[in-house]
Image (cartoon, rainbow, N blue to C red; front, side, top):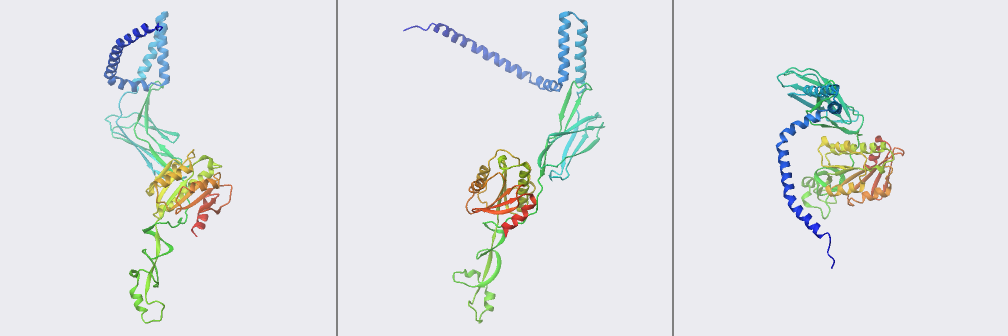
Length: 433
């Protein structure tokens, strides 16, 4: 058997590793302890280093290079340049020192608006310090933009108020804030920014169109709406009729029956006839899959149609569930019911998975209004509708700006087509008739 020529070397390496390992652990522990001891210092130094702007770091780099050149070549002028660069950066840093005792407030008026509605951010600044606050620049991010205004000198106890008008020409959720101030030098070498408030979301809801009630549901409820379906066991009294074999005798109207006593009628008794009362749990499902829409305008019509139906459901005090792409809400309060539609955007989310999620989180749905685009074919609509139980009424609305408004059927599913939002009340009227 041949002996491995590298075996002695491997044994030496293993012994050396065992000797070095305790030393490495000791050095690492010492380094961690030293870093922990320096934490109070580093926590103060780090903000200072972050305050130096790229221009400031460039000046420091030039100063360091000038010092090296002066030391290596003996140029006195280079020393002067290095000292000048260091002094100007230090002087700029001194201008940013000091704490400001400010109380800054950010308030949206209102926080929820419709597209095109007026919205403004109210910024209040109060100086609670003992000395004056020099002029500052306040910045307020609004969506992808940024608003700036100059804060004048504030004496001790003085306050300042500013209003920023927010454009609401598009449906969106606009983050407003945080409000921040920047202190720096005239040369732009050092700049220290302080954040005073948390950001606040402005919800720009889509425009809606008044529509008729979508229809009665399938579940009886004491607080529901009366339908045209006759019933013998409900609370919505409708009329009196003659007694028939099998009727519950508890519903005999004895006073009216007594008046018929002795008259030649077919039945000596009259019973109460009721109407079904049903409370609908309506689900509004907006298809946010990019491939379902030929143009983006159709998607905006679909979102506005879904919001219109949701507003009607809230007004009728129906149970409501909303799903739009990756956003969903179940049983929302009226003020926030439309926030989902403000957040809706085109993405790769599947209509099938959204329908499946609705059936899982809201199993008592009685009516589903599914809104999609012109690129979603009949097969896709049938597949999405198949995720709901047979007793659920499914109404599909297709937003197609290139077509005409109309109504058709896809098996048990009612298919409505709208070319614009104004078509929605018309086609829904045909469903409810």
